[in-house]
Length: 451
Image 1: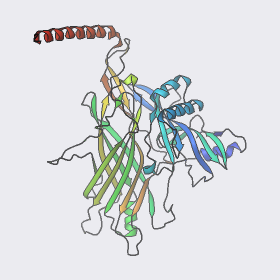
Image 2 (image 1 turned 90 degrees about the horizontal axis):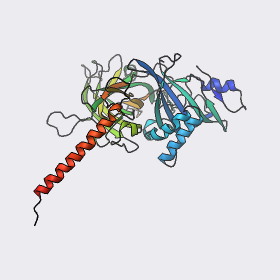
Image 3 (image 1 turned 180 degrees about the vertical axis):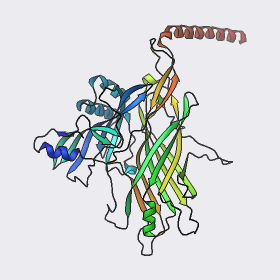
Image 4 (image 1 turned 60 degrees about the vertical axis):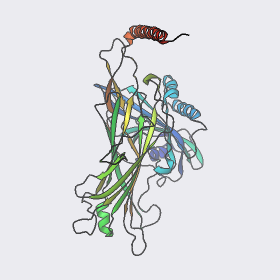
């Protein structure tokens, strides 16, 4: 793992490097260090049409309050920080100002300890021979922290550190553990989660993008056996972020796929169930909210649009059926795994024309997979005789997850015009418009009744 460096010479570099480059950096491990602001470059390798590219996902983080007085000032501030920290080249600075996306503010629902992403920008660069497909995201951090009442600038080496996702700042995210609030009766266990999406092969420029969130409560069986309680309900909350590239958009007026079952007039936008055959769900409810922090322009072509980041907030409840003896819910020996399905429609913008020297009429469009930003689950049970809390709480663990492999992006191919046909297309369009206008004027003249 690459060492970290700091700009001040008041303290030994080795002490900073050792503590910053460790796998987990949290408030409990280093209470004297507080994150103030910073920018990161989270990269991974992608494969497009037989070529290998390196995708850089640049994110500006901040703690508490607003990042900037206005969104425009926030874009300028983020691009300036990325450029000054060396994560953005001078040639890409103008592109950043025109394309950087505002990230939804989800601080009240994520439990992220106040460290939040503010702006996001994805850039694809050619991969060189030294780039290999990593087992996880590689994150290079350029941070300003407060340590021993002094501001320090900390930065990672060329390789960076393993990270859970581009939207999680490795080492500074909140990661509460069991008994973190001092209440021994309240158990907080790690929650394993993942999310993935598949896109329809039909629909042309309007494709259904179905997503599934899976949350695994691997210790549920052991805990319920030890407590000898009847945990009959599981309540789940999840927040998912979806980066939207310039080439597609989501219609904020109709963002979710709605399915109608039976004769009910109310459609279903998400469903919740379990993946194990050992567990039976008696009844379930599910709701999903679509959040977009800025207006999504649906009229712009791909070469004139900016990037966006949208969020899906899911709340689900599952009532577990009792086992054959009727004593307790049938939680399998492998634990409880909750699966939530929902979807959205991705609309493809008109792509840039293809250069004359490029063969073919289809262009690839790369869509990033959604990111599970935050999640929690609670196994509910009747209150104990002594009044103690019988519920078991789970929370998504995002720090120190070294085996979180970046999912492969979704690639679709759409038709695009040829740049060499620009002259002919313009001529035919103008001629058709002129002829149509003359015919309309003639028909109106013949239909007119003059006094």
